[in-house]
Image (cartoon, rainbow, N blue to C red; front, side, top):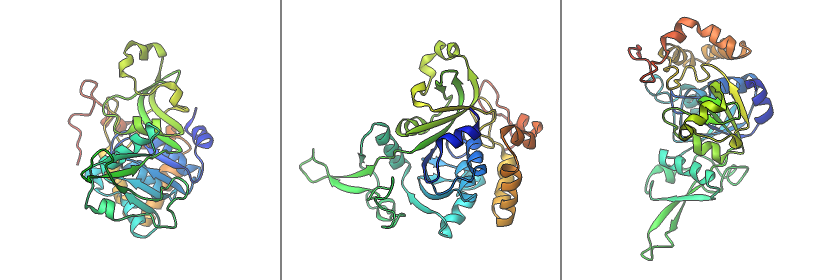
Length: 314
């Protein structure tokens, strides 16, 4: 289906949305832009380490709460520009965990467990400081506690462990290289937390570079990532992660990410960016036409190594 239909059918105001990908790799950008076009509000974003899609949705006013380990695009924005501004001005509530903590929370959700135990985070502000206040605790999908310290029942010496609440998103958004005509998904390269996020969610929307025949995916079934019964919508969108990268298809776009950094640093300039690059463009085809074929060819990946050697990344 189209991105517009997928968002209309499966994403509601107030939903907990898990974002796949990682900083500048495989962000579900086409769906993020469509969420903004449709004016979705009060979203609760959960992610491992996310960048451009998160920052754009926060800047557009679609998000009220976030739980994450890291939000930024590396050297382009060590902390997401609109994300940082929104957090500092109290426009969004933020609960931060470590990368390991978020990984275990999604794993707990994927395994249908209420929590996961670990030995990480003792005596750190990650556990000592809570971003969500009592007015949010225990409401909706927000747990009553950020984390708990508990005696290890299998150790009589009083050892403590950290208990982390499971994450069970309403919707997970993933961008992949391939999807089969039946809904089977194949992600090339690092999967990050995408697979756990998908298994933990009630609904899954997958955008992909190509829809391929089932026979193609059956030739190497060990390379497939998600079965069709986990996927609710497949949205074919070439360059669906732009300006972030999609391994073996294209690299991240330094020119656009630098341009976004400049625009996002000023409130009025960011509103112009939203209008010109999201709201005034009806779909992905219009977005790619605005990016331009020369810029897209500049980031085209080498099919042997999966990225663009020689790309000027400054």
